[in-house]
Length: 94
Image 1: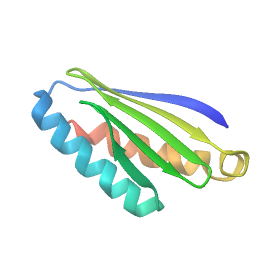
Image 2 (image 1 turned 90 degrees about the vertical axis):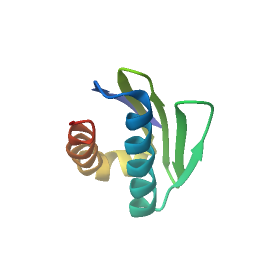
Image 3 (image 1 turned 180 degrees about the vertical axis):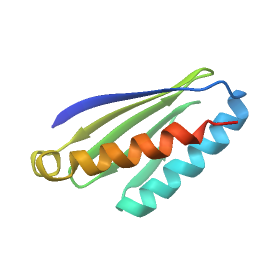
Image 4 (image 1 turned 120 degrees about the vertical axis):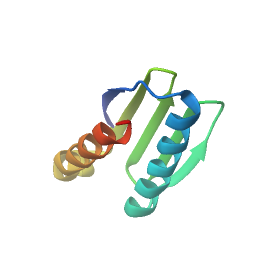
């Protein structure tokens, strides 16, 4: 699996950032047929066929480590990156 990190800064209170992040992760999971597994505080995992994403939300940033299988890497990486960047860049706007 090919792995790539995506980093997004925020200046929101952690409670508000958590609400927004969880809502968006649920939406992305539903859109792409992924399973969302909440972990310890601020940690989440999205999994599906050929996809693994580890997500960590802290009081100042969001880190997404996305791993795609070979087929998805070669065919969908661009579309997934575009969706992530468009969605997450506006997620934390006050």
